[in-house]
Image 1 (spheres, rainbow, N blue to C red):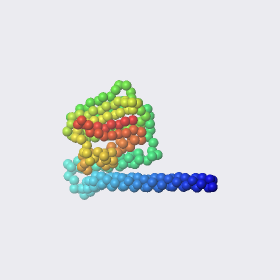
Image 2: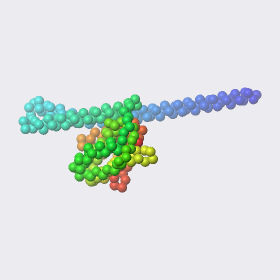
Image 3: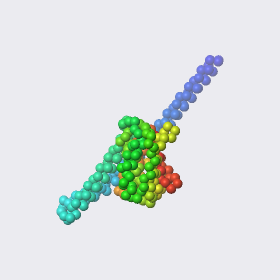
Image 4: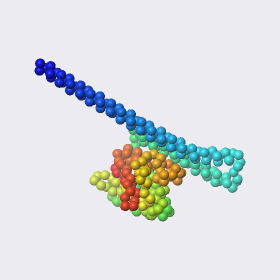
Amino acid sequence: GVDQVRLDFRAQREFEEIRDSFNFMTERLEEEKREKRISEEKKNRMLLELSHDIKTPVATIKSYANALEEGLVKAEDLKECYRIIDKKAVRVDVLVNEMFLLLKLDNPEYELELEQTDLCELVRSVCAEYYEELEDKGIEMHIEIPETPITADVDKKEFTRVIENLLCNIRKYNQTGQGAWITVRELRGRAEMIIQDDGEAVAEEIRPILFDPFVRGDKARTSKGGTGLGLAIARKIVGKLGGTIEYTYDEGKNQFKITL
């Protein structure tokens, strides 16, 4: 009697556990399939965009090369012709290299080379590089970086790329404003780098996808808009460092905040 009931009860509980495990496994597989599909779609869209972006400069190089071969270029235009070919070749090179870097960063096995770095010094040196370029565009740089070092383990080369990208975007997209604000600070044991500008706000519809590959702030697919891979690369690098990068539009300023 009693043993029989206990046995049934235990069997029932074991079946429930098996059922729950099975359901959990099924859900997990479904989720993985969904995630895989989304990531496949993203990758396909990315490759489609890349081929579209490479086609244009390659077509220009081809037509100029043909014109040169057939002797259709006047002697006085030769220099300009070579300059255009070179410019378009550089564009293809940049695109391919950035795409390669993005795919490399996507690989979970790819490790960054971490070293203890003074973030204040790193950001200050990048600002020094861009100071003149921004000033030439009528954009004044306001730098708020403490003298006391704020250190973190970062890949110097790749993290420099992140800061360069953000300052480069200010140069490219701040058509209406006059300022750039760069702040480095320590808050509750975390390092924060805040880069702001008073240019036109990033369009509302772009904000949710701002860090996706091939999204450009000016919405127009023009070479002026850069490769559209910069922010995607920045997010991947910061993510690999265990940090976050986010965009907000606040009090008339575009703000990118990196937290490490």
